Image 1: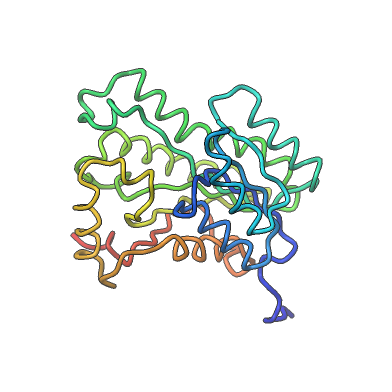
Image 2: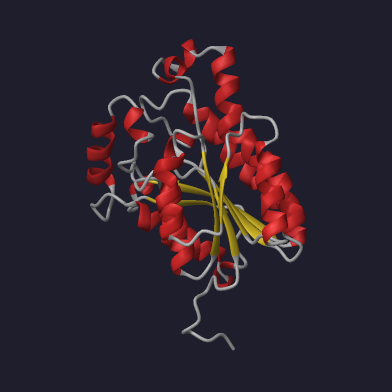
Length: 259
């Protein structure tokens, strides 16, 4: 029988990508995984980002801190090679990586360029599929894969523009991967937080208005924070959620149920 005093992710190993700073959703997830007992491997984008991420990784006791730019040939392989050499296996992978060129993000979908759309799709969606492919051999006893989405994937959020279709593709990818990987015990979820005050989100036009509207629409009447997202995501990686897969899980105070 499970000992309630045992931390539910004790003995598990989690790879967390996309930590940029202490306001990142990925950092909230990494903190929650660590609080629940998981060992951590954390990635940072490049040398410019490393000074912001390294102190956070040290604070969480991460065993690995690795560069990862999914556009750079070989970096994804290098991350998974390091995980294999250090741990030999993996239980959790969190993908929190998205990018669109500014000119494509700030114009309407109709005006998005083919190159900008393809670039956003590759970095924000297909890199998750590439990550899953490399994670599977390290999960012989099953595991959980997570990708970060947003409600703009399912309804029109003015100013979200081309990221709406890109995140919709990411959510569909999670469902198809859940189907393909279910027989080997690997579960896949898309996580859809409400608007948060992160550096990445602040680049969206009308972001302050989006925050205000989220509070107004949410039945709970509050914004979520990165730890709300982190603990809900961590729960999905525990044995308590072992029969859940293929979901888009909203952590938004209930805002998505409102018309």
